[in-house]
Image (cartoon, rainbow, N blue to C red; front, side):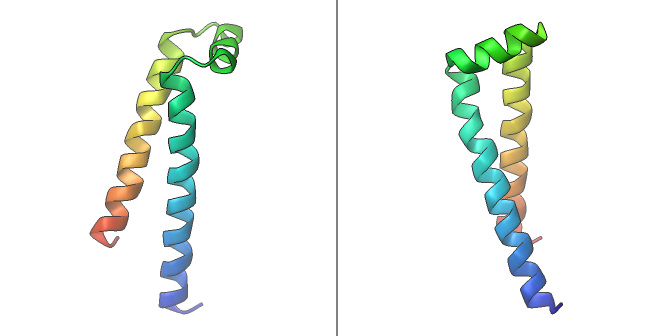
Length: 71
């Protein structure tokens, strides 16, 4: 596979991952009923919901900054 094609595939994969993670952040930080139910079932509400949201936010930031840096 050529380097250009490989770069485009990698770029697209990072965008898709950032979008998916970014969408879940809204539900975690807005305390949506479904998210609260999931983390209550796991016995990790609210600290698990908030901490996983923070980790996902950091992941989105890292994905997007690596795209901007050209990595």
